[in-house]
Image (cartoon, rainbow, N blue to C red; front, side, top):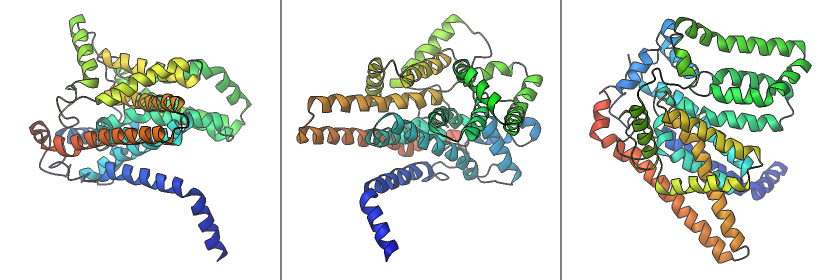
Length: 400
């Protein structure tokens, strides 16, 4: 009886949080798992080719990029997984980690309301659904969000030994995602002395452990670069060839149009042709998010929200291996920032007017629902029925 009263009191105090979390987790799992196997007629030819490229140790170490995802795929191959759904579940795991990292980031910077809205818009966006529900490794670009979330956690945690080991591991794993090396370099440039002092003060076993972690995680990269030095260009996010000025300008134009007009640079197995990455409302929120940073430019997070999009945007524009998935992840943070700024301005004008507050929340809810419906309909209905999509997929769910 006493335990029942305790649970009843807990529920009465926290039921809103419990309901919100249940809704967010349930909706995210539904978006990532529903019709995971049967949405298309079978495995795409790109998925089959990728899985076959990691079915042996020699092939696994032939290229350093996406090593963590490739290692998971290799493990599934060796475990005898034949259905494509197992390989897609690996990407779903990456997508779920990125989604909950998004919530952690937004909750650290904004209110719960903005965090829930931003997380829903991120999880339901077309480019996140495409990358997280495919067996291809593009979902690894979403790792920028766990990296930022880890950075926020490191600033707050008191578990300094665990934090130091996780930081070393994170810096080493960054190099396996094209373009992320620059973020690691920036972290070392800004926090290098602090990290060095922490390592110097750490116990001997922790110093040895961090060294072992670094050597183990960087060994595949060293092996790959020793046999294929040109892969270093892919690691830093640069194209393999210089190309022509006209070609770069044309690619840059197409890349800019892809954000709000039409994105035709991705294969049919990963995108619905002639549709943009962001809808018009999200683009407006991104602009508002950038604008709001001028009032917060003294904060570290403001500099981060400016520097990372510029880095990934530049790497995408020059035609390197960096995907729009990486850019869209950090731009989704700016979408939430735009929503937060708009609500802040609205409530500042109408601080005590309940009708105005209700109207603002209602309009935001309608907009969020409309955006979610647009992206999910485009992914779950329009994309599978497109003729280009159907020709990109085989008639079998088996990859062996």
